[in-house]
Every structure is written in C-alpha cells, then in structure tokens.
Image (cartoon, rainbow, N blue to C red; front, top):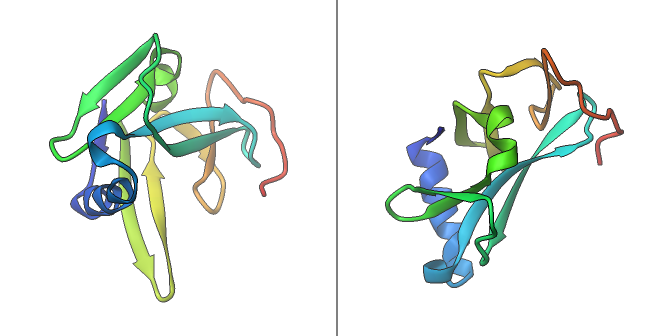
Length: 118
C-alpha cells in the first residue's frame, strides 16, 4: 500500500525515537487544502483508532485510516536533504496534478478544496 525508502525509514525511526517509539506510529493521511486541493499529513500518533490500518514496516508502524486508502494507495515516501533543508517527498501514482513543492495534489475524480498553502 505504501512504500518507504531507506532514507525515509531512517528519518522516521529518528523522529519516533524522540517519542516513545514502542507506543508511537507515523500516521499518513490526506486533508482538504493546499494549492492543488488535497494535502498529505504526516504526524506522530500514539493512538490507533477504529478504522485504522496498521502497516508494519519492521522498525516502525504506519497508521492509515481506511477512508484515505483510495488517495494514497501506492504512495512512495522518500526523504531528501538539500543543503540546510530536508524533508519528506511523496510520489503518488494516483495524483493527476501536484503542486511545485509536492505537498498537495489532485486526483482525476476528486479535486478537494483548494486553499492557500501555509
């Protein structure tokens, strides 16, 4: 469902180590907004909710709510460093349009609600 590169895995493990990694997950989701209409969310979460799917990635777990699967099926998460900056990048085969920074996207059958990026 979601592929995670080695670089992204290392960064996720590092982030979760700041929390209690045994009880923390990376939650991957989608919200309305962004310049293309839908935006990715990546947060540390300690609670599994009803409707969540747990993806075991060995050193960590990813939580995805079943309502968002249609938007992120096949998502590839990577982590890139460039000079003093770094960040997660998303390659989504379902996206028909993505913004320049890659944080927001639109699907062929769903546009979402376009909002100014923060």
